[in-house]
Every structure is written in structure tokens, then in C-alpha cells.
Length: 276
Image (cartoon, rainbow, N blue to C red; front, top):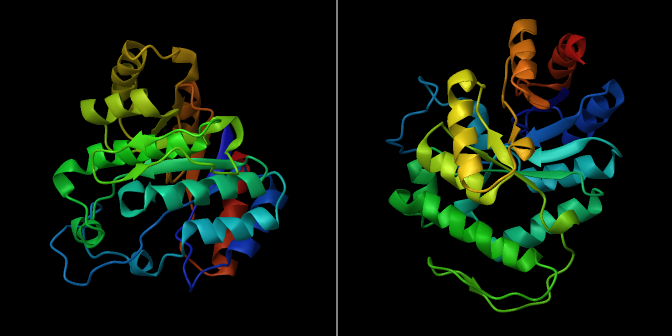
């Protein structure tokens, strides 16, 4: 089972370059980065984990810029987002960013997608919270049109459309590996089965109960059950927890690193090395 990592990289933490080099040298599988464009100070949305929103949420580096740095100083380390808030982007520009990062990294990019939790942040991007899932589906379809091998037009239902266009580079294989994050439920599972390569569940709780439901949706959509990927994300590891994921067939687990300075992050990497 591949052991990857995620971290809230900020202006106060270890740098993307130093972290990426250390991860590759130590044999970790990948680096996934989260995204928040901004955090409105006046906020009615509760932090999902409870309590005060941690400081790092309002200081997060742009994941594509940071992963570009990481790509430049590594050769094998997988790179990904966890997650890209797809509804907060112009899909034409996002398709170009993704294709470019996949190209310059040598096809090492995984697109982790999600719809977020912060209604105020989404509202500043013009997102209607009630239709965020449908908007995300529409924008991914538009991006796939731009990644198609031949110029392909797409008429979106939420105001974004694209004419048949030359749009290069293309992600390797026609699209990057795509994982969708979010809480278990029929709407999410239907969208995973329709559009992506698998599920990125935060923390990995409840997989024993959720996996059969997702597999049923996957097969109902005509997908090969052997191709479904489950990648538990932001996991605080224990030997028993990782053994459980392996038994469930997970081929990758993403461990949570602290949003800290270089010495502290490297100490945690040393501790996590026992799981490699």
C-alpha cells in the first residue's frame, strides 16, 4: 500500500521544495495539497471538525503553484490536490492548469475534487450552494471536452461553455487520475461512479459500511469493480488502521502532516517512516 501525505502548506510552514525533496528521499509515495482561496471573517458556516477554524485555513498556499515547485525538484513523487474546489474556478483556466502540471511533472498528477464546506467562501465565487454538486459535474464535463484528443465543443448548463478548440497540452491518458472527496451518500456515490476513478474519504471512517454501497453504484453505472480506487485521506495512522485499509483493498493512504515548520514536519516524517 502506497503511503502518501497531505499538509496545509502556508507562508509559515515548511516550504514546498524542502518538503517534496524530503518526501521523495524518504520513499513516500505522494504529496497532496488542499485549497482555500480565502476565508471570510464573517462566517455562519460551522467548521466541520468543531471549535475554532485553525489558523492555516486562511493562509493556505495555492496548490497548483506549490505543486509546480514540488514537481521541479522531484522525479518520482506523485502530486495531487486534496481537494480542488472545482466550483470556485473558471473551468477553462483550471483545465489548462491541470494539463500543464500533469505535463511538466511527467504525468504524476492526481486531481482530487470536492465541493467544500464553507458557504461564504463559495458565495464569493458566485456559487449557489444548493446546486454546487451539479455545477461541479458540469465544470468537470467542460474540462474533459478541452482534454479530448480532437477539438470538442461543450455547452454547459451553468453559464460556462466552450467552442471546439485547440487546447494543449493534454493530460496523459486523456485526463488525470480523478478522485472525488466528500461524505458517504447516494448523490456522492452516483457522481463518483459517473465521472471519476474513485473516492477520497476524509479520515477513512466507516469504510466497511460504505464500500458495498459505493461498489453497487459503481457497478450499476457499468464500471469494472476492479478499477474502483479508494484513497483514505488526512489519516492519522496507527498500525491497525492501515492494516484495515489494506484488507479493504486500498492501494494508497494519505497521512496528515502538521501545518508546521521544517523541524517539526521532519520529526513527524521520521515517525511515519515506520509505515513505509
